[in-house]
Structures are given as C-alpha cells and as structure tokens.
Amino acid sequence: MSKHRSGAALGPVAHGPSLFRLVTYRYGRGAILITTNTSVRDWTELLAGDEVLATAILDRLLHRSHFLNIKGRSYRLRDLEDILKKESA
Image (tube, rainbow, N blue to C red; front, side):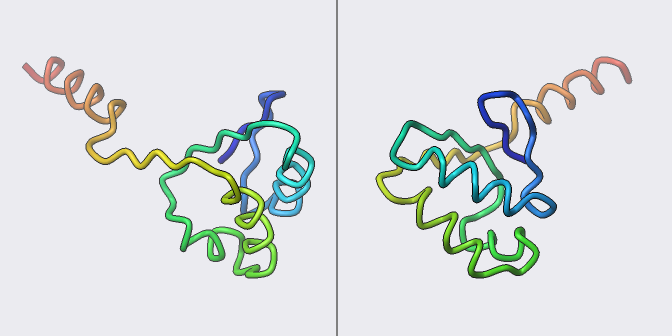
C-alpha cells in the first residue's frame, strides 16, 4: 500500500488507475515517497497484470529517482519477537 500526502492509502491492485493519476499529477511538481517490499520487476503482477499501467507508473517514478534498498530484518518483526520472548519467559 502507498500513502499520499492526504494520508489516504492506495492499494495498488485495486487502485492502479488512481495510483497512476497521483503519480502523473505529482510528476515534475514535487517529490513522491513510496515504500514497498515488492521489487520493481514484480509491479506488473502487483497491478493485476496490467503491463501498460505498470510501465507508465514506473516510467514516471524511476525518472530522476533515488533508491534506498534496505536489507535486513524488519524492526517491527524484531520488536515483536522480543515481546513474545519476554511474555513466554
């Protein structure tokens, strides 16, 4: 899921056209920050197999973009594991 400035969540599968409109509107006007655990090469599948839509969105997002690829364990999962360990002790 992605969030835009208003805080509304956009589920890409159900709202691919809405995500496209948002990205198109923001393109060239200002920054867009998207966090995902889905690889760019899997976005076509994520967007219900719509290769044209995925290509159009990615074309706009990847132009002049910066990637931060963070590897490692999720902080949320690590914290949950710590909580569960404390509860079981």
